[in-house]
Length: 67
Image (cartoon, rainbow, N blue to C red; front, side):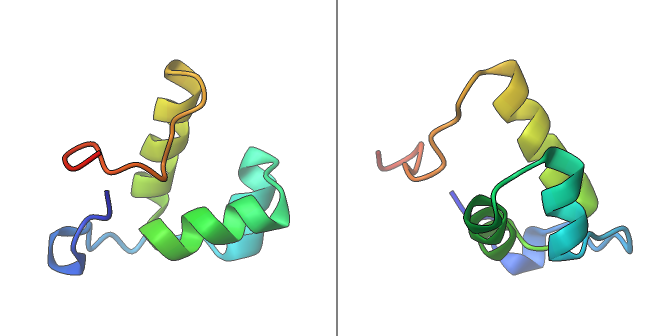
């Protein structure tokens, strides 16, 4: 599920793609996929990665509403 831009955090805290990839030791392709889908917001990406850690591998390809 992608959060519409108007509802996304307006925080000035953001990652560059390289910072995000390095912070979470992601492959280039996975970092690019998540970064393009969720944007550069550090709080949103941090929350996403925490959820992935807490719940194991999160299927980000499936919309939880429509399946």
